[in-house]
Image (cartoon, rainbow, N blue to C red; front, side):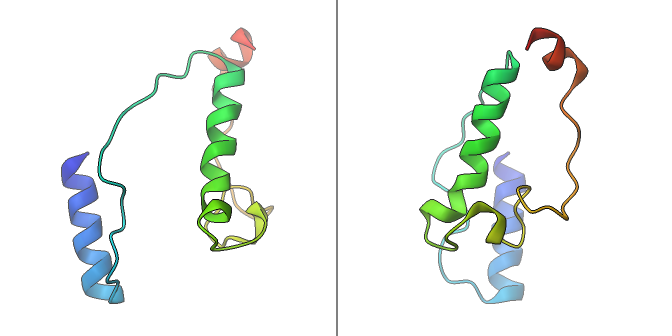
Length: 83
């Protein structure tokens, strides 16, 4: 993860002229065990631009999976079975 974050941050700053940090300081993983946890995490991710003040609603952020025209992977079958 360190290499992915580091390279992306370096390139975003170089190519787009970003001055601020792209990523938060630390990294941790969360294991998703059921559909409720999956939906909770998706909601958390989609709310990040709203909490950061980049938009007022989740579907207004251009790169959000909450946008109607965006395509995301379907919910894994094994999560649906654990629902």
